[in-house]
Amino acid sequence: MTDTRDTLDVRDATDAKLIGRTIRDKYVVIRRLGEGGMGRVYLAELKEARARKFAVKLLRPELTGDASFRQRFHDEAQHQAQLDHENIVEMVDYFELKGDYYLVLDYVDGQTLSDMIDARQGKGLPEKQALAIITGVLNGLDCAHQKAIVHRDVKPSNVLVDARGRARITDFGIATDALRLTRTRDGQIVGTPEYMSPEQLSGSAAIDHRSDIFSAGVMLYQMLTGDMPFKGDSFPSIQAQQISNPVPNPRAVNPKIPKRLAEIVRRAMQKSPADRFQGGPQFIARIESYRRRGAWKYVMVSACLLAAAGIYVAQATVVNMHVVREAVHTAAVDYNILCREQGLKMKNQAGKGTADKAGESDLSETFRKNIARNEDNMRRGAREYGDVFEKMTHINQWTVRRALDEVDPAPAMEPVRRAVAADYDAYTAHGSRPTVESMLPRCQALGFEWKLQ
Image 1 (cartoon, rainbow, N blue to C red):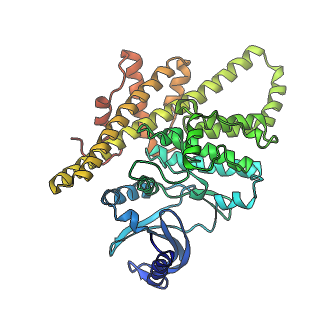
Image 2 (tube, one colour):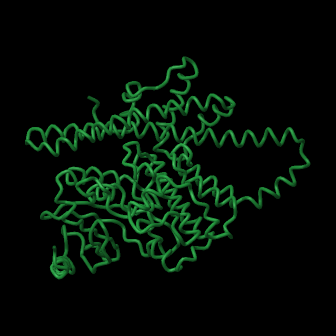
Image 3 (tube, one colour):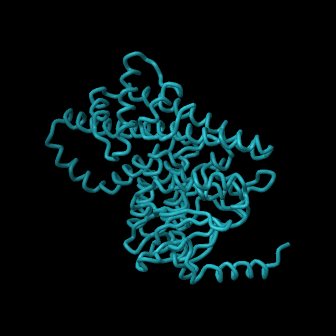
């Protein structure tokens, strides 16, 4: 057993090695901010512009000592560096220095959502504040999901709220690998399962962006009630409840929560991904609809002057347009997932080849499993992509065409949206469902910089 004093000595030595020093000839380390599951975090300033502050994260040696983690470190850091959004903590640098691995992120002058919840001592946050925070989280997640990046570790300690009240998500990608490395040898997950989706806890390989939606739903439940939906004395106890027990009603804890808001929370936390909100925009739309309820009731009273048939048609058009927009967005995300998985597959194939040559059988097996998971995700992505088209054929086609012809509000998604429109036209004209083989050749044109095999 490791003596606690030895651990403290190592930590003190690390502080002494870094605080007051300049690393990479750029970042002047000022003081330690804290420590989490991934490692220790320090406040740093830019050497040439001391007003610019950063959070420098030194990853734990237990993580970086794993060969497969080191292989993925740069890939995952590059993925997070792609995320430029006001609700995501920007990663500005990442590097290895004398065997230590560092992440450099924007410094957020604020507090974690977990500290905010704890400060309420079980009372929950005010509804307006909770909805503003979760909306920011969902906007940030949607930016990542559009790039086929799934967080997988959405929880209050990974959400920072700045002085303006803006929620910002941190620890993409690298945190996921840290979770993988905290398993015991028999595969038992170590950690807190309260925010993990049922598919994560059951060890499913079919995990997509809807897993993050579940976690966001749990956070909203906690913010509104001050309590967790599933509680227990042990990891297996909570795990079993999360997978098998019915989704609890937050009104049972806080009866002041309006029924419509409770329904939104429970929809996000459904056991099956297909029964949840299918993405951040759909989740946000329901929240906005709830917020506008009073104004909508006033409009409906005034609208009584209109013909009943006219009201029905107008409402049906609005509802259908929203449904189609969400369907098009979901299809675009599915396409991005397929393209990204192909890139990851190629990297895993290269890693397996290197491991085979080096005689590293365990590492080679890890890469083989990763390749199989990539292929499964690609097949599932193509299948769900085609399923979206099937559902769209049951909606008024004039509405579908209007939605397909809209310019995507996210410029990076516009090429994917055009591909979705072309594939839908082919589906309705010939009945041919898209396949992995038919979708892959267009990935490079959609901005994925890798060479197909």
